[in-house]
Image (tube, rainbow, N blue to C red; front, side, top):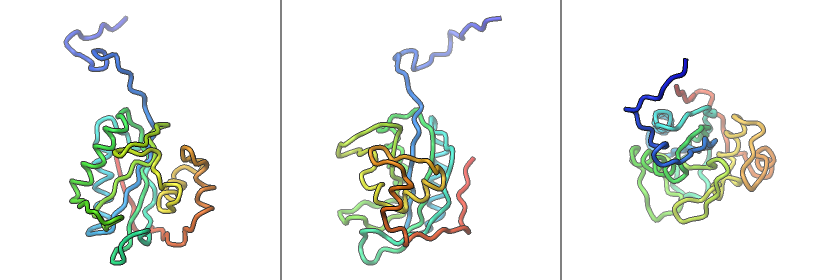
Amino acid sequence: MTETPNPNIVDADTLTGEMRPIRRVVIALGSNVGERFAALQGALGVLADTPEVWVTGVSPVYETAPVDCPPEAQDYLNAVVLADTTLSAHRLLDRALAIEDAFDRERSDVKNAPRTLDVDLIVVGDRRSDTDALRLPHPRAHERAFVLKPWLDLEPDAQLLDHGPVAELLEKIDSDGLKLRDDLVLEFE
């Protein structure tokens, strides 16, 4: 028996003809102000609850010394989230910024100022962007052990678009400031 589509249900994609591919995304989370672990867990929960975003994995949590930050900056907690999404890169960026705002992220003119939460898009499928609003892949991810090591923990064969294998990138940089925090485990449903 063949099912007939319900004529009372309208699919927005049918109206626009738009195809929305599923893209693999890598998102880095970081916090070095306030309840750091609670901020990471909260951000992960919001990401997991986002329509059209399916969290597929989360790395172990690492504590890291601040990089290129003001002298008073405290250590960060960092993790990486893998997800699949049908959202555009710009809509995903809007979501990331809204999550930061929800956790009282304050923006200032001080480069790498301490923050309650940082939600960075590292890669969104094979999307490339070099605008003021969105740079993909993340322009400094290949230099940051606090991104590469947690990502490598999740995907040993990970490749950073335009830069190569994450394992090889990690070998080229100093990762001495990373400390695995086995006592902190991020959970998602």
